[in-house]
Image (cartoon, rainbow, N blue to C red):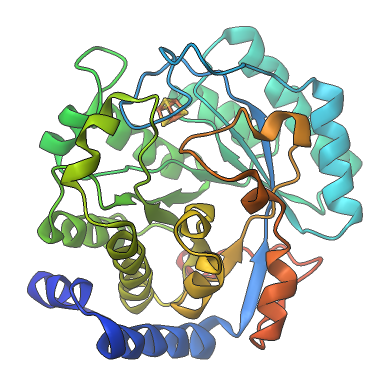
Length: 343
Ligand code: SF4
């Protein structure tokens, strides 16, 4: 479906019953196109180490209050086997950005081992930041299937304001990485934060249109949530209210579903940080993926991209969704239909 930028801005701004209508429409498009199905990705936050210093993120290198951890290869492997045996269909291996050559090599070997031990019956989603094209190619060959790299904002001026001005943080490099991921054959996911300081509705509309234009296969978008140990916390009085950010994020999910009926859209955990049933609301606005967290509990408090209540990571969202008549697809890969259609 094609929607003009002006229409998107108007839809983003809808509230109350009009917003409910928008989300119902998107939910129907989802149900008609890819079914009332919700796919699972067992989330493994395997390290909170990061070489970057994004101004919005609690894992930024300069945050000395974070207790850093790295799960051993055996632990990650065991968690992957747990996900496989419990029919999650996919795992999502998520980390900060680590570029060390040994880590890159060993991580690739681990992907290959997981693929081999599961007879290629487990999809692997990676979310490990910006890497070189060679690294992406290597990880793809080792067994990675999908890669999520959020653009966060497509406005270079906002990008500059929410990142340090140095070689490690470069807007064009982020765009290049997305292209490299596409070139080496990953199912490519991207997304953005909604409700950032400096951001207006036009920016969010541009972000949504970028996702369509880049022809993404999957999306993870969520509300911006301030973290007290980050520089952007200073701007907390200049952003929309928590409820407004929740509504904007849900409207964004609905609009993206209308723009791209057959992609995979994750209902972000950050929605739960703003409402008790945030992720359920995300599914009812057109999302079709949830990511139950299977990271060992001892690590979860240390993986705070934003400040979150530990209970969020333990919630049994699959059970909640079944109450809404959604079919939670245990044992299914849930590849992006959009990716399959493009191929
Ligand atoms: S957003 Fe990602 S790259 Fe930036 S500091 Fe956080 S974990 Fe690192």
